[in-house]
Length: 254
Ligand SMILES: [Zn+2]
Image 1 (spheres, rainbow, N blue to C red):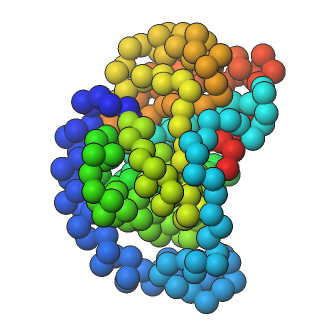
Image 2: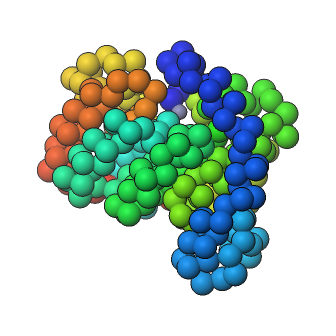
Image 3: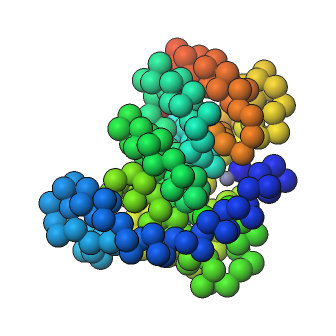
């Protein structure tokens, strides 16, 4: 979500849960077994540095599908009620999306993280506490937020790493961008903020996309942090319309 009040209620829970992250990461026997099976190397709690290829530090907006490409990005989940509904709509129209997950949400719902990956979508690190003022915090804090969420998401997915990093509310710093990029996570921005978290009505969400699409290809939606019927319905209307108009759906460039 962007810099708004919705979702503050769960930030305190997230911070509490984050305290247990390090312990969990070191005891990840299930994850390490699967990570080893996936990449064929010796299982380790953290991917060896050689397995992580650094990416560009600049904030990505473009689509790998080129000029008529659109990137659907879905933030703040996974959520047991809304993520499955979003996945259903994406599957219905054969659209791949990028899911920017909050570490504690991924940790609480590993089944959903695996469903997202199995459906061919990509993962994005959206920190642990979703602090939209994290750009004012110390580098130690920023590092923990990014790396703990990276571990939580990778563990939940069974070894599939997030490919992007999106700062909550866009609160990037040069330091956080560089750190994420060094871990193979391209900083990810957006061009169209649908403001679906404000629940302005499905028609308004659709109209916002139509009006602001000239801004660029990366669209921001949310599958958690509140009731998301309007988001699901807006996607249900927009995806077939945009396909009909010759757009193709892809991933942000890395
Ligand atoms: Zn967010």
